[in-house]
Amino acid sequence: MTGFGALESGGLAWCEDGEVVDLSGLGDMFARPTLNELLAAGPAGWKDAIAAARAHDGRRTPEREARARLPFEVADYVDFYSSLEHATNLGRMFRPDQEPLLPNWRWLPVAYHGRAGSVVASGTDVVRPRGQRKAPDDDAPTFGPSRRLDFELELGFVVGVPTKLGDALPVEAFADHVFGVVLVNDWSARDIQAWEYVPLGPNLGKSFQTSISAWVTPLALLEGARVEAPLQEPPPLPYLAGGRDWGLDVALEVELNGETLSRGNARTLYWTLPQQLAHATSNGAPLRTGDLMASGTISGSEPGSEGSMIERFRGERFLEDGDEVVLRGRAANGVELGEVRGRVLPVCG
Ligand code: CA
Image (tube, rainbow, N blue to C red; front, side, top):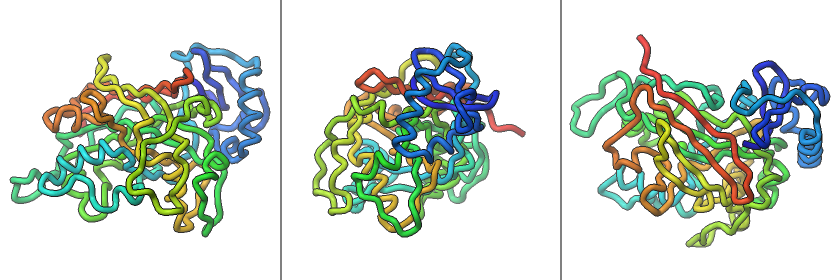
């Protein structure tokens, strides 16, 4: 895994080649409890920080023994829905009598606003949430533990440089504002989600917890993994045109209880990360340092490349108490993203 993180013992750290280097002796910005000051430093500061981290002779710990915490204070959290295959698969299951893609899907990167306060770092257990569930044949909902707990495999990006209220960023400004990427597990309670999501989108079925990598991989390290994104039809409106050279060839894997459950690739995303950012700011909503934006579940077109359990098992199997999910990603240039690990605990009480 390669990237910057924050140690439980305090201060920042750099992870690469299986080792974690303590950067707290590298100056004030690196002695902080989170990456936020580094995030705000901008592209020139990020470049210097990577060089300094790689050259630093700090205390070294094997990667598997390092204790890392949530790497940055999450400002806002927006979750998109950018995989054509995932949106199609889920549309078929949630609205079997309609066209799977709603009319807006190919015109804009659909998203919902999540809860920043329940974003946690890899290694944090997830407690099975309670909520309202109503099966189609039930007369009325009941309240209790989710029976359809799921994971979602996603790629997220972390905003460094903020914008002012009223500013709209063009797709070309992506690398001037975005510091790096993390893998994201958007834990989802499908029964709670299916009952609550109409008409305003997901809420409590998602907001109980979202897990991200403990290591944020700088965007600069993924230059060698950039590819042309899939063709968009119809062509997007002018403010979303461009950013097609920011497809990312990152091989993705989901492991369940030690066995590979699916393999996909972030390059299949229909809406690219720069298009997501441009859309999120197109109405003038400001960016804040620490904003987390995630791609939405990444599913491929082949069987075995599904990014969620509901797709992989067609709604017939979900997460059980004690199950452990691990998300992994490796870019085509060999850079490994920080894994996201989490175990399901039974609802307490
Ligand atoms: Ca999601």
